[in-house]
Each structure stands twice: as C-alpha cells, then as structure tokens.
Image (tube, rainbow, N blue to C red):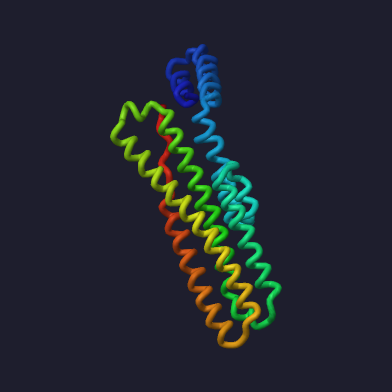
Length: 222
C-alpha cells in the first residue's frame, strides 16, 4: 500500500495521495489486527516459531510442555516427563557399574523427552487447524478437498494421541528396568542395559517418524 502510494505521488504529484495512502494503510492494519484468524496465524504463529527456535537452543522440554494448552495432551506429556525425570535420577543414584552400562541411555532419554514435546506441540497445531477448517467457509466452497484435509488431520491427531499414551507406558516400564539394572552386576547388567538401549532407540525412532509427519497445512482463508 505504501509503495503504491509513493509511486502514485511520484507520477502525479497530487498532494492528497500521501494522507490517503497513510489512512488506507492504517485501516488495513487495524482490520487485520482485529481479525482473530490473523492474530492466531500470524501474531501467535510468530511467537510459537520463536519459542521453537529458543527450545532448540536452551529451553528444557519440561518448560516447553507448560506452553501447551491445558488439557489431556498436556497432562499426559507432563506425566511422561515426570517418569523421564525419575528414570534419570535412578541412573544418577545408581552404582558405578550401573552408571557405566547405562551411560548411553541418558542422551537417548533426553531425545525422547524433546521429541515427545515436539509431537505434542504439532498435535495441538493440527487440532487447531481442524477447528479452523470446521468454522471456516471453505468446507462449503471446496467440500471435497476440505473434507480430505480434515480427515487427514484427524488421523494425525489420533496417531499422536496414541503415541503419546504409548510413550508414557513405555517410559514407566523403562524406568522400572533402570532401577533393576542398578541393583544387578556383571554380564546381567550389561545385557539388560543393551536391551534397554535398543528399546530407547526404537521409541526415539517412532517419535521422530511421527514428529516428521505432523505438519498441518496453513489454515484456510476466509
């Protein structure tokens, strides 16, 4: 808008173009700022992307989980992170032999926590996109494509819910196995730790695969 006004003024030298351009630009900004979809897609989207970048650098998953909307997903993630924390404490408080054989498990547990939170964040964005599809007029204008998008997003949300619940159950079992390894010694501890690391790798791969597929499209335009 500003660029168009500048070009028009340069070509016509009409003084009234300047205040008219500024007034039109201010009106567009005001209308956009009062649009709830605009605030959610642009303003809040910028904050979430900024938070994601910070999360990659230094923000722990426990804090990022508190940014999730209150609800069942957040409760499950926070419960899983509490089990994750207790598993790390069990490793820290174990003997030297257990610490040695469980050394590789620590970074794998950290990656599980990071990916679990990322899956939950993308699950919430997919759920938000579903709601916007339902309330927008695009379902009436492009019923076939919108219904396909809606079904795809709902499938992704169900998959994320199942994986978050499964990760919580697996972390409970893994924590119990960490405690058992901490009281074992010799070859038995090494064998149990090797199996534990393999299961941690599998859980990480599953979370990573799901995280990479959870990418909701842009909300539909009104």
